[in-house]
Image (cartoon, rainbow, N blue to C red; front, side, top):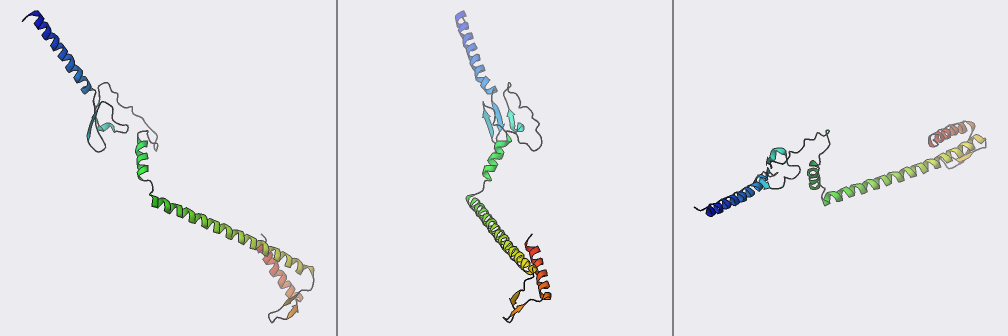
Length: 179
């Protein structure tokens, strides 16, 4: 063989070696991991956040391992947040459930409004009863002769004994209605 022929062969061999080495480099920079369904995945990009460390089967030599982060109990990590958000989306109430909840809220509002109105009427009735009891009490304590209609429809004048009984009944009514 001539020198030029061997130099050309050597150059081709060197070029072939460089090409083969260049083709091998990307293969060593490959990531290999198992996705959540169990399928093997290959990529030149790292696996998605949240991929468990045990599922990462191969990483490039220059890739660093994820740092270990210690978090207080009950806090979610950034990688868990999308998973919990996805589960929250999946567990979102249906239209029927939302409609039922809206009806329940409406019933609660109506019930509260009824209770409020009932409490208002009761307070108004109590004020009226208090005013009437106080008026009757002033009249009975004034000493004026009081005439009323008895069960037979005949007018009668209260004697001292009847006046005292009516006074006690009116005082009890005033104390219970005028709090």
